[in-house]
Amino acid sequence: MLKEGFNSRKVFAVLRMWQAFCKSIGMNTKVLSLFVAGAIAAGCAFAQVQEPIRVALDTMETHDLRVIENSSFRVGEKLKYVVHYGWMDAGEATLEVKKSPYTFNGREAYHVIGKGTSLGAFDWFFKVRDRYESHIDMEGLFPYRFVRNCDEGGYKIFQDYKFQPEKSTMTTHEGDTLLTTDFIQDMMSAYYYTRNMDFSNAKKGDIFTIETIVDGKIYPMKIKFLKRETVKLRVGKFRCMKFAPVVQEGRIFKTEEDLSVWITDDKNKIPIMAESSLMVGSVKMEMTEWSGLANPISKVD
Image (cartoon, rainbow, N blue to C red; front, side, top):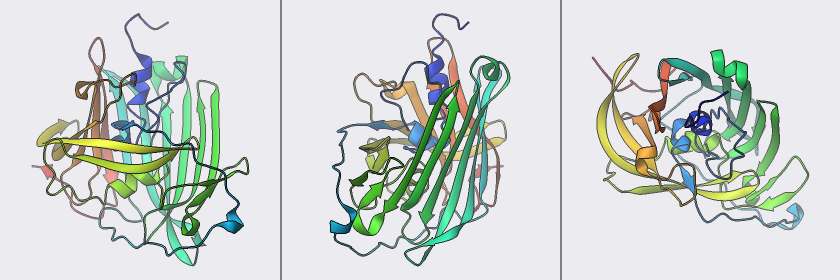
């Protein structure tokens, strides 16, 4: 039995990554999820929810696919995270980039896979087994397919979204075709897309927005730049950029102090740590292992 004042929802919400990857609103209080899409999304709030309209795919006009230079990640990258409350490790997550075995519109794609698992005592009272997958266009960093298959304490979630980016539409596993914004991101692809955004001239208070589809609804994912600083993890010190959610009244994270997210201040832009304040102490997620990076990491000797 959890003690009064222990907000288990926040413990596992810290691992709800980029939005995206990022369901920090409207959560069932019984759903303590290990979301592994990326720490930036853990620090996002959503506003101005849009209910996409249903359309007939064959009536939609086709437009050109965009091209965006990707210098932040590559095939072979693998990141491992642990989330802990005080001295207790509550869960772990991995993010891996592979080459998709499929081509879409004659273009190659990344296959990114996120896995989340509860650990120790947390696994005993609330078992989590989450898996997220996204096939992301290599040239334009937008998704073609998103699969979410999660078991969170017996609460099961399955989603299979197929995107038609050339028509700004997506089709759900229930067979509905929905009109989206151009090159909308899913909960996983948002994480990798955001890593290629330019923060070099970011100033305190600057807000960055990524249009994201979550549970069949369109959300603008918003993050606020706070400052640059060096942070210390179990595996060393790193130069980082600190972000916070753009909060909304009634959401899980009500102030900037509730959740902070740090990404490496280098070309990789890896979400390396996220910390959330609780009534007693705090819960922290941090990267513990990395391999296959596209660029040198901002580790301080």
